[in-house]
Image (cartoon, rainbow, N blue to C red):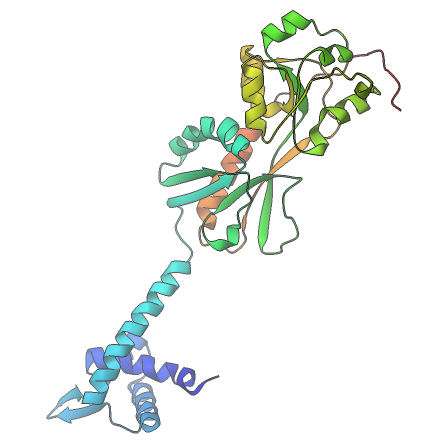
Length: 316
């Protein structure tokens, strides 16, 4: 420990005494004895080699050196106080910074956020959507939302809360379904096959689980998108069939603006998690928000449909 840091207690006592100009009043503010204040200031004067106070009659006054030191310490302790306040546990009310995958934020969270604002009007949520992962320990965001494939799960200083688990199902517009007439899984090959650029959720996996080999058909029209949002927008406009999380299109399925092209869902579900720093000063409002997310997730997903029999083709 450096010499300057070793006199931190003495400088604190002196700073208070310089404002009160009384050892007795300083002792009352510091909740120590007058003798303790006198001793610490005497140690500081011995270290500095100059007097910090002098008496004028019955009054205590600062020397020139004492005045100079007091001005520096006032600024220093104000800065320390601001630093402590900046990391102090915050109350439940306030701003909450939330960041997540564009598709999750845009398609699922944003349409429901008004309900949280009704329940917690003192918590103002600021949403940002990006498919680039952001570090919650940087202090720029409080809650991150990500899927199980991209989630970093090996940090002891990070808490993770499961939000929802969803089937990956094939969806398309009602007009396309009526025009093609999907009776067998292979009927889906008659139109554009849209998929995200994540290998776990692509059509090759879906057909392989049905023991069908679509690569024998060289006329298949494939299209790859970089996000669920892009693919869902395409099929809502009538362009092809898309494998996507059911929860993201559940409202459209209920309304009939999208239909499930085939009952078969991928064997592997997609999992979404909320994660946040274990030592976050905004823990109270974070937990209020995550609890609400869990409630919304548990009430928004319907049971998956059962699979039907098909005429399989051999997988090479």
